[in-house]
Amino acid sequence: MKRPRLMLLVCLLIIACDQLTAQTNENKKAAIAANERGVALVRAQRYAEAAEVFELAIQLNPNLAVAYNNLGTTYNALGRHQKAIELLREAVRIAPELAIAYYDLGCAYENTGRFREAVEAYQQAIRIKPDFAEAYNSLGIAYDDLGRHETAIRAYKQAIQTNPDYAEAYNNLGAAQVDAGNLKDAARSFERAINIKPELAVARFNLAVVSLLANKRDVTFGQYRLLKNLNSDLATKLYDGMCQGKLILVRK
Image (cartoon, rainbow, N blue to C red):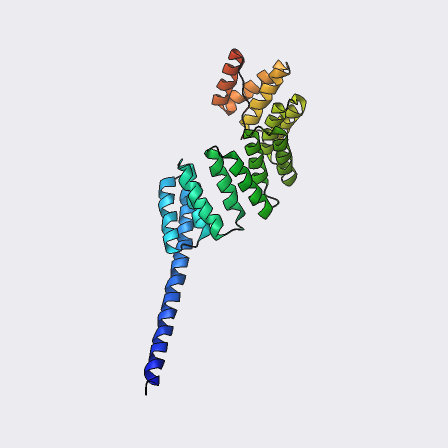
């Protein structure tokens, strides 16, 4: 006698589950769309608006790791580094094999001076994605910040091996080589960076600095003249540094 009622309850339960599944799927689609809108806002450098849209994406789908990652990098750009770290940690918890999230977490650690933790994050990104040239480059920067210049040099060389046209890695390699006391190799690294990317002003600045240290003032003044048109701020910094006898290399 009770069986029909039981069958009715089962049918109602199935219908409710189907409706819930349909709503969940709609939320997931809406979350992906919101995440894409947020990315577009970031590209337009509208970071505060982007953060709101990424937060909406997370509300719609609390398991969307890329939304946590994008919100974290947005907060990083807004200077809210601790909040960025919390969000990026959540991204790697949800998606442990998301290499970009470990990379962005490393950047957030660097911005708070937590260089050892940055090293660990970059190493994890590289473990997941062995051809991650940007992670090798940032790993080198973190090692430089720790004063481990020889280790940094190896990281920059690995970045270049992965991407032979990585001008910024050549520039950072040159800076580490200066710190290690090898001016000749440093000058070659800066020249290589300039050959790959002539508009890379920091490499021209650094070549001017090491040329001055090597008493090649003609090279220094040649780079200064080019910098005046390319980057007036760096040109002024170079001129003031020459006058004051205080020149510091620039990394990127």
